Length: 334
Image (cartoon, rainbow, N blue to C red):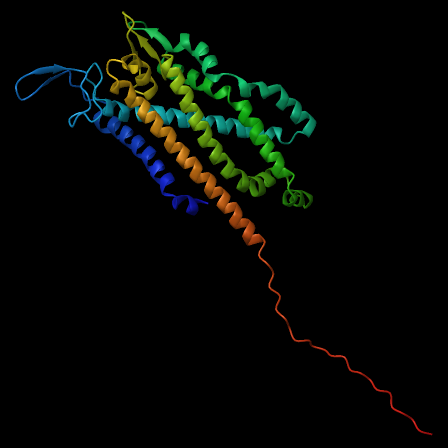
């Protein structure tokens, strides 16, 4: 599967794009202590003074915001928060959902279906609106006040984004495990004395792992979309600082905070909100390319495995080792 994935250039380039963003973001925090380049005033050759924001140019590739912060530098600094938070939330969704699915898959079908029908409503819950109402008073605080510790705010936000997605993931994986348990080779292993942990490790896991990887990327894209919606609603990851006069700021430089802060500047300085929108779009497109590459690699590996197990048996003719002897009855004369 991985050999087929590496041969797909679009998926590999998309993966390298995400890795490069995260590495540069971590490097900026390690080597430059998270400092952001800022230029409030700029003098040209004639001594003319111009103030921020500055449009994209050779000096500022993506321009600056109204405070003079370099937007490219802000994007790089916030990449580890946005992508890292998305990956961690997605991992916890899959991990908790998988543990519950393994437990529920042992139940008989009527009991499993009753649980599934009860929690089926979670699949139609508007995640953005529920998250907004639950997080609004926790993550928003005025400048000069003492909010809750950063780790508590982040932990509560992640818990909300995780808990409402777990039921859907649990029953999706539970159905996949039940389908695999009904396969003939799993039934044969069970008849031969294989216990449930052994069946999961030796027979279910090899077929479930590719599904988990594809589901992980799908959930990661969904988490990014929810974060974008919350950013537009001015609910930033880690907290939203409200200043006197209505100005807002993000505790971290993650992309949802940039999007929420810069969205009102769309008409006057369109490049400012377009930068975080652009990188959110590129990240989602990159994840889509990776997901498409994994799906193709998974299908190719299944087809190859099927061909390997269904090779025609070659019959080699062998010379007969025996022969019939026709007996003739001798005539007897009196």
